[in-house]
Image (tube, rainbow, N blue to C red; front, top):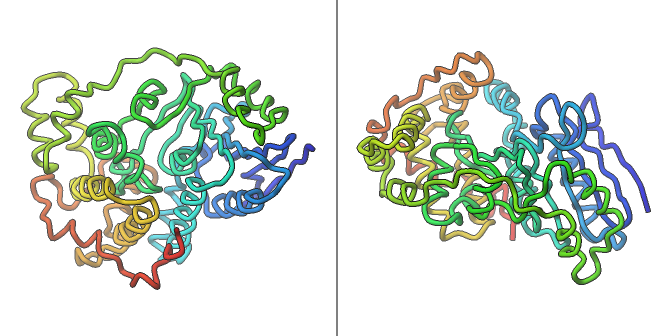
Amino acid sequence: MNTKTVLPTGNAAEIVTEVHGHVGLITLNRPKALNALSLPMIRSLTECLLSWRHAPTVHAVAVRGTGKTGPFGAFCAGGDIRFFHQTALAGSDELEQFFTEEYALNHLIHNYPKPYIAFMDGIVMGGGMGISQGAQIRIVTERTRMAMPETNIGLFPDVGGGYFLSRCPGHSGEWLALTGETIGSSQALEMGLADTCFEATQLASAWAALGTSDFDRAGAVDQWLALFSSTGAEAPSAPVSQIDQHFGKHTVSAIVHSLEADDSAWAQHTAHTLRRRSPLMLHVVLAQIRRARQMALADDLRMERDMIHHCFHPRHLNLGDAQSEAVEGIRALAVDKDNTPHWNPSRIEQVEASMVTPFFSSPWSPGAHPLRDLG
């Protein structure tokens, strides 16, 4: 059975779905934006996955991105941050809807009852991690560039980032969350953020072979993987001992001071990176990761939904929506592109606990929480 459906999500078909054999295939088709997720795309993905969840003819689901020259080459660069900026300044309800529906989609993927296979080729960042980290099979290639870079724009690693980063070995989750550093396939495998590596030249063949595989049969997934898995490209490993030494400290200030006292090139680079991030959000993110280690996924997503509300509505800081770290960070990176965000406070040492704690207070009662129905 081969069927193809184009799901219009605006002026173009940003989601293309097909069923080949017994596998549902999803292609993110917004290449000019590196497949950054829009609200209509999130709704289309959710609709598609729900329709296939109990369909007897669909035994597995796979998702890929598409680049400017064809399929693969870019998975998903995250959420549409220009949309965040515009709707935040306009006070639009669509901003709240975006995060509620995105996090519900992330939860659906993590709990999908059929094999869900993510082809994490090229750029995989932010929201792209949200629609891939819950996959049963997370495939990377030598072209994979993976990151949760939200502190660079005054946000935090959401889409379940607290959950999956906190479960990375040692304190590598804190390192990835605070710095937003980009890693390749080898480091992704080492840190438990990927399951296998394919050579990029094999992706088209692997995708085509899905349609002839019967994933309802025991061992079929392993047989398909065995055909295409490779050892992956060699790359320098993350300096695990240094990461644990520095990022195991109790506070952000202690982490940065520890790095600055280390004269190695890696430590100095890392300290410089942290000094450029939002000081306030660094403190929030460290608390997020450490709280999430003890949380189930649904509870983490509810916490992140609370946090994102406070990010765009910083009432507890006596600031208006247009004065949030997120609005300022996105302005500097993607709107004015001056790369000189004016963070408030401006230094890590100026952040007080009273500024951080309210991010973890829910603005909703449990029964009114927008993610109350997550299991």
